[in-house]
Image (cartoon, rainbow, N blue to C red; front, side, top):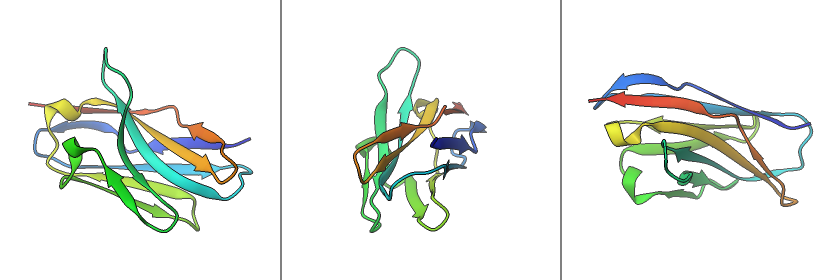
Length: 116
């Protein structure tokens, strides 16, 4: 059974920083894309950032220049460094892991709240 567990959320003032981490455990074929998504109240889940095995990254326009995604393939972890946080970044952040065989796994989410 594959488990995906996020950590690092919390409450921060606007302009502050947070670092989210996601750890994958269990039996899984090789991991391909790892990513972060978020969902604000009353809104659909949206992509924040993704990173391939080789380190190629992609960001939503709203976070470019402020967020940085990274991964540790040996430890099966992915991180999201969030700087210059804004109130509109407030959401539940979810980690997503895709296996090379096409399976997709989600974590339970971690709350990020940015106060103005």
